[in-house]
Image (cartoon, rainbow, N blue to C red; front, side, top):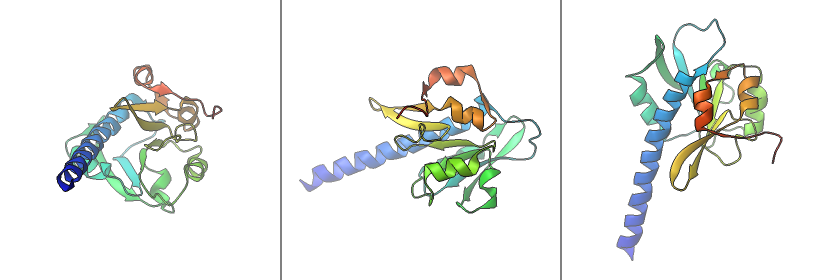
Length: 169
């Protein structure tokens, strides 16, 4: 029985690692299909709020990628950090220390693409939320939140997403 439990655990750990890698690639690719308001210069910053297995893979991939001509940097941010609203993409990890509702209110009118992976977060204010559908990684987009953030998302990315409406619970 122990070997069966160990095999299941190893499979889950392997699956979780594979999902984290895919999420990191998706996040970096999202940057290619989103337009931030004019005036942005300097580095392209991805912030991670809370704990996330995606962080390791984002750090690895960021070394080899640019967004346009901008160097990609990944950094940890806290709910009280001034840099919270100055990142381009904010990945909401586990134990962020803030609810998605508080985070949405705090980032209102800031050009930050929020990316989460918790059920219901897209409806409650995250721009993009990862979901698993039949064992495959997919993502939801809340167009209302994207627009309120001052971001523009390409129609190509929107066609790949499941669109959600904040007003529907």
